[in-house]
Length: 160
Image 1 (tube, helix red, strand yellow):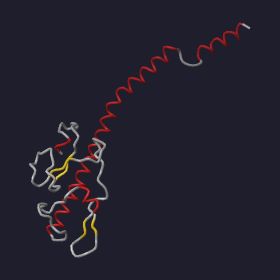
Image 2 (image 1 turned 45 degrees about the vertical axis):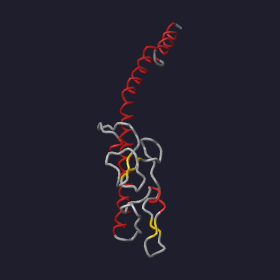
Image 3 (image 1 turned 135 degrees about the horizontal axis):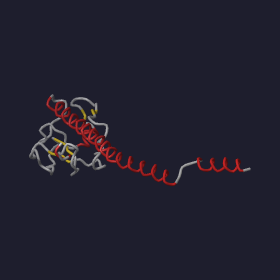
Image 4 (image 1 turned 180 degrees about the vertical axis):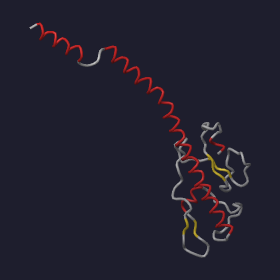
């Protein structure tokens, strides 16, 4: 009988974790999670920056294609447009090519700014100064993010 009690006692002691072991394991997990969180936040910010660069490049390429079409005489010129589109929405709606019924669209949609979460972009016209933060409204010469945030490389998003 004494032998049976010893065996049951040994089994009880070796089954599971002690409270101290459990607290230690939880503390290690919390420490590792705390160290991984900033890395994950940086990764998310980096992904948004890549998306912002891609969206800006896509819209600027569409503006340049519009200007090329205008310079080649495929799009009827506007009075003070200098061959640039009147708005970003004009790039989505498309324009009728001169002498045809064909409507050419330069963008499928206006992309969402990943930094602000809105489709509201800062615009500059040909007549505005290069670092202007207000749009004159004559045409769309350039586009930039309205975010006041700072990128991982230390530059401001609105200067990209």
